[in-house]
Every structure is written in structure tokens, then in C-alpha cells.
Image (cartoon, rainbow, N blue to C red; front, side):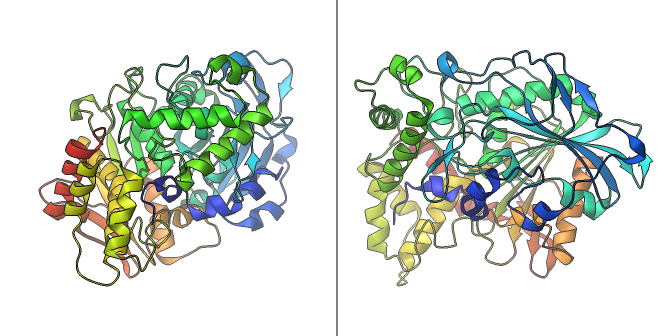
Length: 534
């Protein structure tokens, strides 16, 4: 058991298993949910209309397709640049504004549009030139033209900050089909792995480049969403896992406010706090060596062929996951003294961006599937694994005491499950709930195995229908469109920890994970005694 491999815990299996297949398709409707969408015929615009062209000033974009789902008919605009290509001298730097493009852009791009990452076999895929987003723009409801500005849902993909793409986040079609309510849907990319999250100390390098990308996409939204009939006063930001993590970090970033959204839906926000800044150096050294840049210099890395860097990224991730590099910081947002003055855990509540409302969620057993803390692990296995997570004997003792043995044969599994679940996900939800206690709600996903990412298909997979699936999609759509979920449940308060439970038997209001004082205590001890200090 290796507790330091929380990165893998942030990768929903549906993304890891299908990413390379999805990203090699040309079909604009390709998603990891429901391969039958690929076979659906793309419609022509009705009434002899031409595909609309949106003038953004720096580029003119023509819709790539037109389709109808349920009562909603919409155009899809593919591969809109929201920033300049982060290549050459712009490698490993904050994104710059998009460059002027001549002619009509129709979403066709030479080469892949997903950010450099790796497939489920470890093979490099994607491109450095990846700062694109897609927009779904409804134009008719029940065949009648939509004349008023519409709500907006912006959705960021998960994938452990290592994999994923705008196509893997889902698509709004399942929500359109459930309620027939139209809204504009925006799905941006952000840089991954070494390209997005490497933060070498003292280097001519922008830490948290992937977060800078996220904020650049938000800046684009603020400027251009009206041109796609979006109402800038009714915007929801959403993400699952690392996708929720980048939105959560935007809420504490030192950037222009107000942010271009008024509410957020954060499903199992995934982020592993850094144990020690010294853990950044091994990642940088390994990445540079894999790219044949020894000694490691930024000039060498910026001059290296793109293929060499994609391969180096894949090799560095593999080495980090295997434990060959020792205890590292991982590929996550880190406090950088600039965009992120503090971590999410250390940010005062008053420094979170003000929002009208927030819904944050957890899966009941975030790390309970046996993937991250193998079933059958003993107490001895658990104690040995702590050394792969932190090199500090003091921190190892604190964690072992926080998560004591219950004396059962698989006690090590349970302890590992709870540690990984808290550090990677649950405590992040807790910080969010605390920050937005006056306007926030909480839900617990407790259907089936209720492991991390299991609520994703309940939102996006069109092969799942009826019952709790319909209820789940309906309240999400209601939240996006009306600013309030159809099913009302109390605001989350620390003293009673009330949440909406999505159970196999249906939804019910009850005590959440943090009604238990022990769980709150664990998060506080981790924050004060472990994060950044071990």
C-alpha cells in the first residue's frame, strides 16, 4: 500500500480507461459517458439556416454542429482558443491572451486539442497547444426560438491533475434531456502534469500554470459569454475531483474579483496538500533528466522538442507513482506566494471569493474501492506505507494516532482508506463548507460502492436513466437554471452537519461526515500539524 499515490485517487476510472479512445475521435459529441452518442447523426440547421458565426474580435468562430436533445436544440462551437499557445518561450509560464486568427474558424484543428498527458498504458498523448474551450449554445426550446439570455454552466474536468480533457468532463445533453431547460455550457482545458503543475523552487517558471489557465478561461467567460447568449449574472462553475479542485483554488487565488460566476457545484474536490516544499525538487530534476536536460535549466527545457517533453512528463509521473523519487510534492496546486498566497486549508474564510451559494459533495467512501488502500492490508502494511507519504517520523506518529487500529485483520485497509479519503477529498469539502457556511449546502453520494467519482455517471452518462439518476440530474439542472435546487435541504452548519444523502433507496436529509467531531478533529490536526510541516 502506497499512500503517497493520491494522484491516482483523483482519476475517475471512466476517464483513465477511455481517455485515449475519446481523444482520438473526431466526433464532437464524444464523451466517456455513452458511446452510442458517437453514432448519432449530426443535424443540419433547420429552416435553411446557416451555421452561425460569432465574432470574438480576435477570431470569428462558426458552429461545428447542430443537434436536439429532448426539448433543447443547440449549436456546438468547438476548440475556441481562450489563450495563446503555451509553447516555446511561453512554456511553463502563465497563459497570454489569444492571438489574432484570420478567416472563419470552424473547430477544426491540426493535431490533438487535449493537453499533454498520458493514456491508461502510460503512453504520452495530447499536445502542448491545448488552451481551447467548447461552447454549447441553445437556440430553441420546444422548437421555439430562445430570445432571452440564458444561464451558464462552466464545467472543469477531473483526472488527478494528470489526465483529462474538455471532452471527458461530460456534456449538457443529459441535463437538457431530463428537464428540457436550456443553458449555455462551457468546457475549458487546462494544462496537466509537469506542464501545468510542476513548481521548481527558484526557477524562471510559473508555478500553478494549470490554475492560471483556469483563471484565463474564467476571464474569457467574463468577456465573451454574452456573445453566446449567456447571462453573466447567472453563472455556475462546476467540477468533479481535480476539476472541482481547480475551481476551489480559483476561489482563494489572488486574482481579479468578482469571479465570473455566482455559484459553484464542487463534487468531491480533489487536492493533496503539499507536505514539504523540498518535495518539488525531485520532480523537477527527474523531468529535466528525462528530457535530456542535464544540468537542469529552463533554457534547455524551453528549447527541447515537444515530443521529448511529452515523453519526459509520462516518465516522471510513472517514477513519482512508483516511489522511485521518494516523497515528492506531486502534481498539484501549491502555495506560491503569488497567485496562491496560501493553500485552501490555510486560507482565512474572509479571503474566499464571495459567492451567492455553493454546493459541495463527498462520496461516502472516497477511497473505499480498494484501489488506493488495498483491501486486506494489515496494520503493519499501513504503518510501513506512511513512510512513502511523509519522511517525517513525527508526522507518521501523528497520522497513526489519528487513525488508530480497530484490531480487525483488515484494519490497515480501513486506516489507509480513511487517511486517503480525508487528505485527498473529505477535508477539502470541509474547508469549502466552513468557508460558505452561510450560503452552502452539502450532499453525500451513497449509491452502490459510493467510491470516488461514482456520482459522475449519475450526472453525465446517458445510459443511466430513471429513479435517483433523474432526481440527481433534475436538481443539478434546477440549481444551474434557477439558482436553487428543486429539492430543498438545509444549509450546512458546522454545529449540525446536515447534508442531503443520495442513497440507493432515494434521497434523504441527515447528518453528514462532519457531524462526527472526530472527523472534524482529524482535518484540523492534519491542517495544523502535517500540511507543509512534514
